[in-house]
Length: 319
Image (cartoon, rainbow, N blue to C red; front, side, top):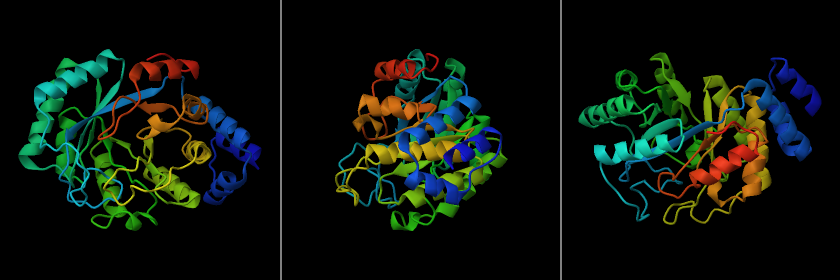
């Protein structure tokens, strides 16, 4: 079955949801990883898509996402601030560029960014566009069309809005907004000409079937970049005592995402720092072709130099 599905995808066809679930639950693991890697090598070049983020506005978020340290509903003791100073953001942007990272996103807490706050960040993007060669991305919540247009005019190329989990499971994790509202933002961003980065967090209590559901929702939306985050249980949040997801579940999820989304940049994002070097390398040989590098929003990430070594060992072009 795996061989037939792999050949179909290599020849331009698609896997079905039932086939993806069956493979995720029953396929020989090494064979599944190898098939995913072959598909990645067929449709993606040897250049790994590297990116990093700046926590541009932190905390006080009115949304009640159960995984998030920045929600005002939970007592997580994180640093909070309204907007990162321009000088600090520019210093971070120059550092990321000097390290060979190609993309940079400003990420803001809260439901959305409006008015003068959006103008401030747009001016910051223009400054980055003048002084660096970074490809600029934004992650600013549930925006309206005119706000997304402003970001595009300021130089943003890609908009990030994670679905986070399957629509069938999302209400278990957040009740202050919906998956459909996220999809509406994604569609509007596409309509104004922005690329889309959207993925999710695995290990929040969802089933493998729901991870497959998420992959097909992302395929339907036509996203080009799919971050795969691993839950980092944050003390003070409702998920703080969640048992960690196993390495095999992580690798299977990545491989299945590659079969469902053969052309996408599928990137390891938050939470991977807890994994062994061997597991991270295996993931790069099981369908991944992107990494979120440096520190994450409220947790530590992997060292950039260590990541460069890992990328080279997995056969990718150097950054």
